[in-house]
Picture 1: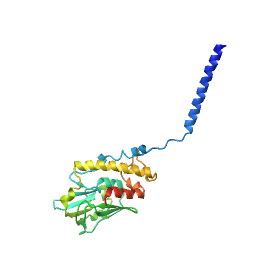
Picture 2: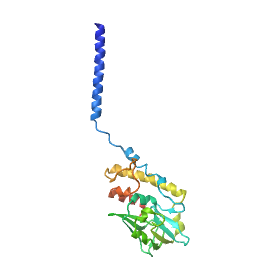
Picture 3: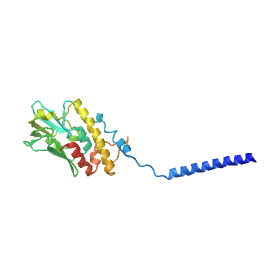
Picture 4: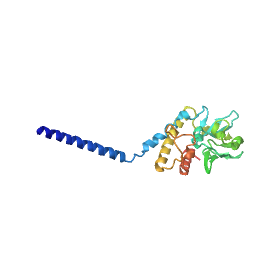
Length: 235
């Protein structure tokens, strides 16, 4: 009789445990899926924003506003947009360049890129007087995307304060270190924008789960576009 009582008690405990496990399984299935957290959103920004994916020619000086300067034997300089900026903007619908003879100052507006109804103002990397403009670029703005460091140049300047201006720019290994810092700053900027406004990103992610660098800014909302210009273009 005692043996039967012991067996019955054990069977009761096992049955109760099985019922408890069944209830836990049902609750787990009914619970809503967890939403991505901030760090997971940040992870999306990393794969396609690595420095080796951006062109950074040696001997070219880079301004913090993401324009560049190439020194010519004539004493003039050519000015253009760096690969970082042209990739982020993506499609270029039109480019506005200054007229020949206009005097410009380092850090002040030099040219403008238009994409749809939005405009990105570009800062002059040095002080100088405009002595030539790239008319080919105004007719075919896509050159800025295909060839930002040669055929896609913006203007030629006769510099008026070159030595002092170049001290405010980066070249060679210094330019690479600066690019890495800019990419880290960009990731933080995009993370903050996505955290503050869930609809800030209007496009899709890449197949590998990262955000595609090409045209990324063009897929952000207007508020993010304006904030980017204020923080990164210096114009």
